[in-house]
Length: 362
Image (cartoon, rainbow, N blue to C red; front, side):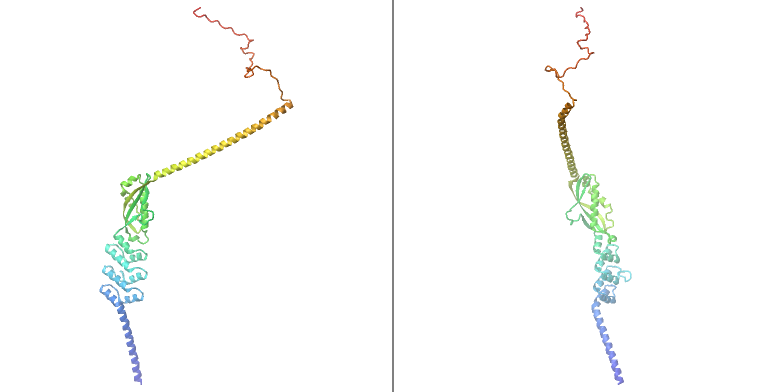
């Protein structure tokens, strides 16, 4: 009985071991079926991807196929894929888990490496996580792009309007060639800032010109002056060139402003003249009122004269005297009486007249 019990125990352990071995074999088979092809692909491509890292990717919800493809691309492109210092599998997984685009970053790094641009994985991953298109930035750095100034999608504006010192308006369309500045890509200003600064520089340059003909004759002077202003400071782009695409002569703003000023001065003068006329009319009416008041006062005074004469008669301070009747005409402008010393009086002796010599020598 003891031997049978021992044999039964041995059989249980044997069957348990066989079951565990079968389970392990099944798990290994499933793992091999899931990751074996990827590991074999990485191994044959000289990509440093371990089998355990592939299993860990499955548990961390990372796409193993994408990581393996990225490692193969980096290895075949000649990038540093060292586990400690290079573009390791762990760093690729970390960038994927952080929400980045691993394949886009790898393409950008490969393009920069082929073009001789210094761009490592850390900087490319930071640019990608910052929300910028790192691949487009590298392509723009390799092949500069052209920006229209003003932008073609700007509503109501097809050209930059600037006025020279002679008052003539010029409408200019410019084309700005830029390339990406990788060092300023994070935190640098975008295309809108470049367009605004170039427009400001063109307006300033034209505004300082003595005549619009100077700009028409040498438009490259404007572009050189704007280019030398350092408009690409603190931006994500480096300005390569500024080209004046088209120049149109607009209105004579200076003449129109002078005409408007003359009209305004005329209206002001008319208003002042109208004010003076109104004041003159008011003064005339005031004078008429004063004349009427004076006449009324005169009438009142004349009405008091008879009463005053009557009072004077009653008080005896006023007497009347009869005058003799003078012939007609004598009463008007009578001659004053001659004084006693006047030689013209008839009772005064007249001086003797000298006797003159007779004519003809008598």
